[in-house]
Image (cartoon, rainbow, N blue to C red; front, top):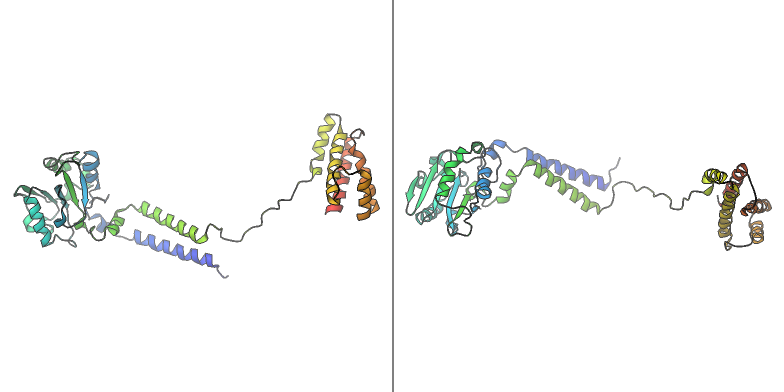
Length: 335
């Protein structure tokens, strides 16, 4: 069976969807969770502490995506959590950071291996000029996993509060920076952010993109063969309701009214068929029927039109007989 172009497009698009989802789901959790970024909700991430400090306690916190030689003038505290070996603190940054601390800045390094992750000049806690360096040799005090016990973070919060005040967004020197540049977010911020976006959000975005592409390609048309719409001229004939109408008029004692309604409807359809006005005389109708059809049909129509006058008393059985005759006559005239 030959596939249509639309079917081939959908198959290819579905294949791409599966490929993209396999990329998202095949990543190694251990590698991702080891990056202590403020975006990560994994055990080694620090989103909980970052949210607590900024949204709950009211400190002016921001993420820092540039080298240390581009430090903002209003920065007061720099928090560096487990910098990656792939993005080490360069010598030029070390000099810039040393000058910033000597001028009154505070740098807090939190890492499991200070001697390997942090340059020697910043590897121990000490005062430097008008500023200070603080070094913690365990990330547990600030990670999401460690935050299960709030006491782990109390020492860091107390240290930060001694150098910056809550609600200090408008005060000079109240800014607290969290280093994301040395987590690899400086040059590939978008790619790194995607790593820490929850899987459910990624799946939802891909499915929505798949639906939008399909909708745009189809231009809102339906796929598959178009089915015929029902005929709009299929009108239900009056004789289907004759028996119920007959019962109604029988209870009222006037079945001749139902016969009058049926024959009047027959006259109106016949006049439209013959091109006559609805109030054309009976003789004119019969004459045209004889010229277009047979004398027998003309005779049957003349007999049925006599029931148009409601003054003629009839029974229910006669009414049903009249309805059957009108049906048979209209079948022969109109098909």
